[in-house]
Amino acid sequence: MARHELKTWPEYFEAVARGDKTFEVRKDDRGFMRGDLLVLCEIEPDDAPKGYTGRTCERRASYVLRGPGFGVEDGYCVMALENVR
Image (cartoon, one colour):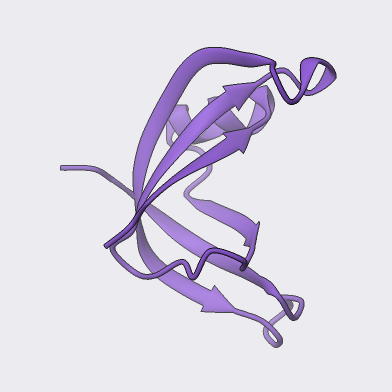
């Protein structure tokens, strides 16, 4: 299991933190796997790449769906998120 720090815009960060957004769509360039720890780091898009707010949210990838197929483009993946126990 790997640990991935991922930059996330405020609106999406908030949705994950509240539990409303239970998935993450990402370019599949890190070899994401089921069980990986995703550390979402909130950034202000206008200040990128140095616009980190300092807020983080940890979730575990409970399922990884890779493209192409099922509406997922080639080179991308959709990860189901679960709370870290």
